[in-house]
Length: 337
Picture 1 (cartoon, rainbow, N blue to C red):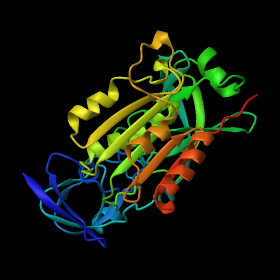
Picture 2 (cartoon, helix red, strand yellow; picture 1 turned 120 degrees about the vertical axis):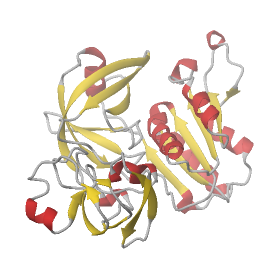
Picture 3 (spheres, rainbow, N blue to C red; picture 1 turned 135 degrees about the vertical axis):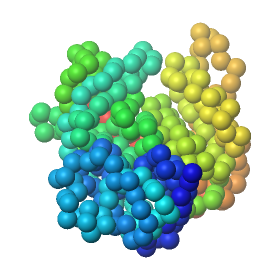
């Protein structure tokens, strides 16, 4: 049985089954509510029950006192509906509305995706979750006070572990550590979420998703978020790399295409060799977009990769009619020793 949940002051409403938490159901409905742990320990998802009945679930009293419970407050990460509900709760509209945290994390897994790319999986303490928007990044806090930024490759609904695609940078102290000395269960510290690279869901324009190398990581998060939330806007994904190995998750875009008839995928290699046995598109990835779309005036573009690619795409896409305000980018820069 499903109940109708109405949020104030936005007026947004969605159907919620009795066997799922309100927070989880709101997320599936594409609505972003604040949270911090998802297990009743922090109180960040606290809301006022204006009308209706809930099953409060198990939680820690420090997160929701008996007095607050008597006043009709609930933790949406634990509460389940017993009737139609009206809730007073703040919705998250932009990345700036999500609190930036400094957290410890443990290396959960190191998975080699290519000779120079590792998928770094991180686990947070049991009492913590990182709320973020698809496309945002975190910064590792190193012992010498320096920072290293990496985009999150997983979508917010899949936040049991944080996923980062780390490319080995010659002379890069942190990436060398990841590839040579880092091991499972190592402890790191980071700050996040950060950045304004996230999907503008209020738009209905078709999207061009442009990724260069490991710029695929936040683009992956955007696509998986869009699929999870059944966003019906056309998505045109272009992923550029130097060689075939640079397309380090080669089967994943094809899996997305089987799930979604409004997503198409174009891989592009700039320096393919005979060993690659490549018969697909070649050249610069942003040029492939322009070959396919001469007029970009009706699109939104989400681009992530090296600064040279971002700068060229921005200049040439706007010349092709793309409104400047519809170009959203995350430009990767690297720090050496």
